[in-house]
Length: 202
View (tube, rainbow, N blue to C red):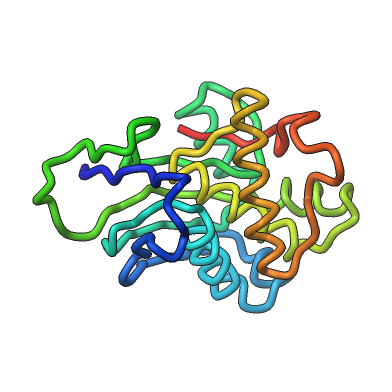
C-alpha cells in the first residue's frame, strides 16, 4: 500500500494539494439509518469530504478512496471481537490502511508511486450511536456527523491515546464540525476525557 506524507503544520493550508477526486463509498447494512436520517449516505459523503479537506493533510493531489459502513450493533460487536478482542458493541471502528506515515513528513513509498490511495474503512453502529445521541441530547444526524469526522481522522493517522494527541485530534474535529454547522461536541473541557471513549481503531 502506498503511503502519503503527513502535512507540515507550518505550511499554509492554501499551499497544500487536496485530493483530486476522492471516492467515498457508503454502504448501509442497517435500515434504521435510512429510517431515521433522510439521505444518510449523502450526508456521510459530504462529511467525509469535509474531514479530508479539514484535516490539514497534504494529499498531494492524489485520488483517495474511503469506505463507510452504516451498520448495526451486532455487526460492529462481531468486528470488535474479531479485530480488537473486545466482545462488545462500540460506536465507531476505523480500519486504517496505513497509507499515512506520522512524524517525519516523508513518504514511505517510492517517489514515483501513483494511482489512488485506499485510506481504509469506517464502520458506525446504529443502536449505540442513537443511544449516545439521546444521552447527549443531540440529533442522530449531528452525532453521526461527529462519528464520521472522528473515523476519517483515525484513517489519516490521528489518535487520542494521550492528552496531547487528544487535544490535537479534538481541535480538528471541533473545527471541521463548526464548518459543517455543528457545535463543539466536547463542551468546554477538551481532553479532560478522551471521547468518544468507546471508539476503536485497528
